[in-house]
Image (cartoon, rainbow, N blue to C red):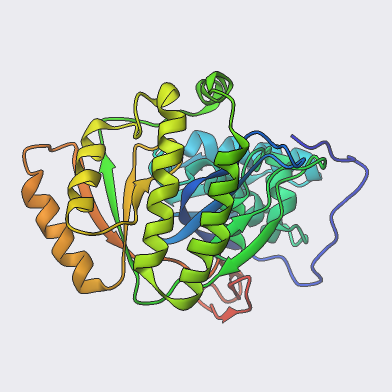
Length: 351
């Protein structure tokens, strides 16, 4: 966590502080790290994809005391306290979490919830904090800025890895997701991915990361996936992502029990590959799997086929979603005009 000077107050926005703030933060896929060894001085790096849904939605309102309710309320209240203390903000706020990303599923639930609460608190108090400042205060972005990039702007995101600075890695590329693409998410409701101390222990248990593997992953990301996304070619994008997933899955197998965390998701991904779809994998530690499709009809047919094929595994669920080429939506509501909302700017702030 980054330390902040308690005497240094964030600047005011110059606008009247609102009565309530609602933040909708997109989920994300973390396709994989590029270099765990850091031979060039930067560790991790990563490729990710923002999701229009599922999402995190929180509302913050001025109150007589700090409180939180809804799914993941305890994490929301904890984030509120950290950000309030870090920046000297009044924490007498009621937080309502109306939607939450599935926890420990590989979709970035902790980062999106923390950023939504922290940025929402800043807007509620009429101060100017960036999502990156909030992420640093919360200790987010220790290895990856994919979640931060999803919150800020969405798209297919490449971060440059952790260097000498004690800050989240820089976002070095952001490409809008083609509107026609669809992503099939495969959930295993019976499992949770690694997080917290278990994740730290698992990372420490991994074998050395060969430079040859880092070279291949960087090439797949920068000369495979990113150009394909820019040209709207889901098949070529999928080929690059699929190879990255196989290489990384094998490297992480010792820590997560196989190429993919969930054996049932692994079976579903193998079945999808057999249909000719190359862009399959697992987001982060899983257990959520994904498949990248080029159009809505293809996605609908595939989802229907997978639901029939795996009907005997009630823990599996298949959902078709769109990519998100914009960041979080922030709606500001004043006491004088509680229903007066308008959308403006890349920050997606509704006033």
